[in-house]
Picture 1 (cartoon, rainbow, N blue to C red):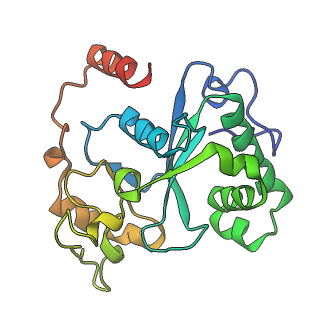
Picture 2: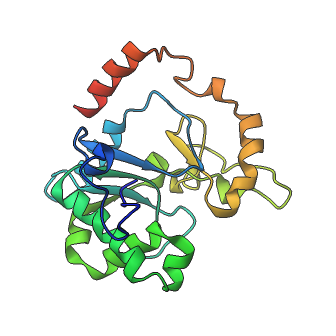
Length: 220
């Protein structure tokens, strides 16, 4: 989204309004293996939750979440993220694009691409840590529980309000579900058990006029 196709390691040029954030306050970065499963959740809810987590209650410039299946200092996942359209937000994006070029032979970069670039940037730069906030995965990056079983069946984490589910495993009503890595084989089963028409807000009016009004409410 942000990288230049003609000049690796640089942001896209002035003619690319999305990459330059000329028209937006925030950009919602989302992988192709993510489904929005509750269309009544406002993106601003996530942004405000991140702000409240910060010591000075200021807005961060990059929002992501921890990995529900891991518990280490750098166990975050960038399958979903919010990038603030600010100098610091774009500086971080540029840094990540740069690292994918300068560290192209790094084992993590080869395997995890942009996520590994963020891990390196976060580890090595205090300014990156200062502008980044990780919200709970249950809010912003829910996974299928333990990525299902060997037969392709989905598992249940139990009580949606229980400690296990609250670690970051999807239950009906969550904003979204992410099927990282090998989890993609469970997508069809998930859609059979939880068809899109049953997702909150799926049957709301999304005509162009309504969409524009909703967008203004979310972003500004």
